[in-house]
Image (cartoon, rainbow, N blue to C red; front, top):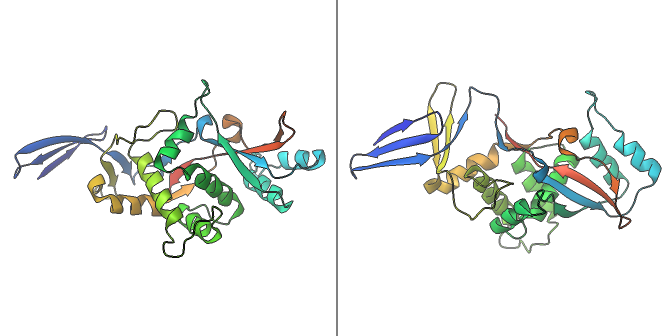
Length: 251
């Protein structure tokens, strides 16, 4: 079998035994470049939460003004300050597109009907816990079990759904495009520092899932650019807070 890769991710695979030449597209990740993003932040990856009870105007002003050492919005500090008041962040929605279409929400539900709630819980944990690693946070969520899965004989309810989610993203699911469960890529090609290529093909799905699940972390994008991280009051009299989803490879 002969294998040739092009810079755009297209690969020509020649199987001499079968007498076939196949062109397949792979997502390419290079160790020689800066750690890469699996899921890019956009306004469409904003998750909206309702505060379980309203905070005072003074508390809101104090939390909304929290900044980090770089002068940027301190999202971790704001989330922790809200939770320290005994207030929970209850997931309500994901940002629709300008036409009002809930594309990302519906894409997630096509993977699993409970996936939006699971990702929303993980997002909060990524700020309240002392790690941002996807696997570690999913393990923590499984122990808390906020969705009340029985988990007596099968303790992989959360892990299985998260593993499938990151794999579908790697294979072509996007927040802004309706997804029909078809794969746009056949896997990932990981180029190491020596120029050697590791191929994670969809036909070996477990290996691909393992790689993604153990090599991703949550990352905070620009709160100013994507409009999240502020407690805001709405016409229903409730207060809301928004977090943004972005996933980056750890290396």
